[in-house]
Length: 453
Ligand code: TRP
View (cartoon, rainbow, N blue to C red):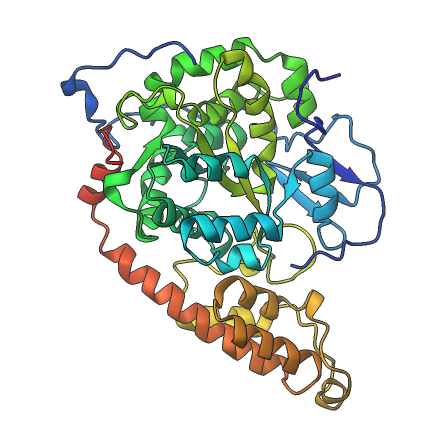
């Protein structure tokens, strides 16, 4: 059994058939390199000859101690559920804490900022030690934000943007430094067909979309693991030495036939939680506390991180977790970039957005107009309505649509039309900002340099 200290140690949350929930939606000092070493040249590395592995890609499931009859699996590689995801169960299984009204009130009092609609609508719904971050803010002490992306596809879809939108808002509110990890190494190890040079290229490609979200360059450092590994390596080694194979296996479900890189990787995602990895960006800060915004499927990495932190004489990172952005087809799971029609991509044209939503968004409305007028829609399963709760920040409008649609005053087509308008505007504006992100801007964000804070 794992000796992990975090409550609810096993990483994979597996529910027996159950009713869906009511939830709506240290370290060793790193030698500072000389100034000449500081700039990381993008895309010069030649990994072209490095092929993908030969064994089959395992989501960590096969052969792992998971009962056959599962209705809900949530780990970094799969989010599967027969019904709506039971978020209360995840909170219980992972041992996290629901974000309370009181916590949001305190947040508002301290920052003078109204909580983001992701918070008030419980899209970011769970945390670990968020109050510790608010305590620091209250005392005027520094902390940094850390988030990341696994670059496995050319284009990001709307679900990928949620943590970045939220992280930008946090950076603006707290005025703090931010590091963004692009795990090109992870995608190489976990995706059978991807070659290393391709993963590295995708990291730079994805960086453009991330930059287009609007991060403050003077406070944001984006890095590819392949490029930046040397700065993190002392921390990675410490984490690896403190973590046994039994532990990663129990948290991540690795099997005897998974490649050994997978077992070593969790330490790479854990490492940026410790400020020792950023001697230059964080100006030599010793043990600076860290807040990680992420989707709840990433929590497994940070349970492991929080377990080793005290032994490394480091602060445990705090976390704030989001729910998953539902696929167009609805029901369980998260939107997948590989199932074309389940997602809206940041590269979609206005027409593609319109067609996908009209054709594929699962409707909670009735079959006929007469029945809809009489009975109204079931908002709990309606995807267009749920997507609006993510992207329409007007609370009064959302409440109005909710009332009208559930009582039959509004029809599915009208709700979809509203969503299409919101998304066409949002995606269009993103595309404009992205077009303005030059290679030179990417290079600046990804240069090892000291951040201003
Ligand atoms: N593993 C994540 C993914 O596949 C990427 C990631 C790296 C990340 N570090 C992170 C996500 C920190 C959230 C927070 O997308």
